Image 1 (tube, rainbow, N blue to C red):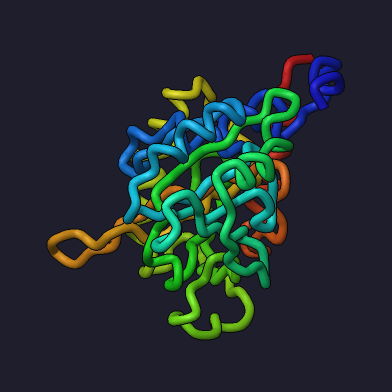
Image 2 (image 1 turned 30 degrees about the vertical axis):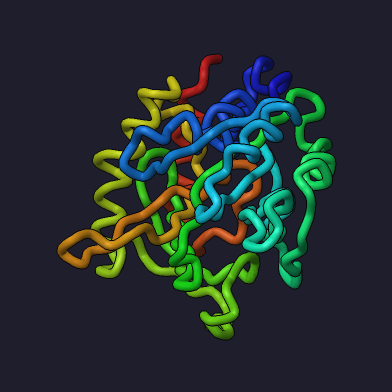
Length: 257
């Protein structure tokens, strides 16, 4: 993709842009935004071992490999309540069970994530995960739709069975007004400035996933960025496809000759 882009072919999600905004590292780089939360980064097994050794007894964390999908390489980690040297870990894939591992055993399991310059990020576990995840779909810097999903991975048993299916909502759906306004007027512009990504460089198809954070004193929802997808983003709302097509044609027409 980088080679064909250099040859003058328009590439929506350029590899350089993907590496800046659409790997789990973006959670560390943008943690200062109000969509962020306290996030650590580990560049090696030694970093991971040191970080987990300092893990607070009462605090569950979620560790994520740099690139992946479907919950692969995403782990909920917390100290075992009755075994000081062990951790209770659960991968965020459908049907995965919580298991007890020693620090060394879990670090060994994560070693492949650090190959070829890989890394892991470490975030606080969001207790409201049972209420689902909101996916915001964007074209460049404009929100074009939403979907409320209920991923099976890490969903607590107390939350019961998730609602079936996924329904796309238009960008102006009232339930997501505050989230859309925050994305378009605050978070996306701040992310662009922080990462050095101009608006024409943003993909014409990408999405951002949010979990519910703690409610405000007034009872309003807050949102915590879970991940950004720019290289594997289908299904995409059908009602947004005309906007995608128009934007793509505009980018093709304006590319350097």
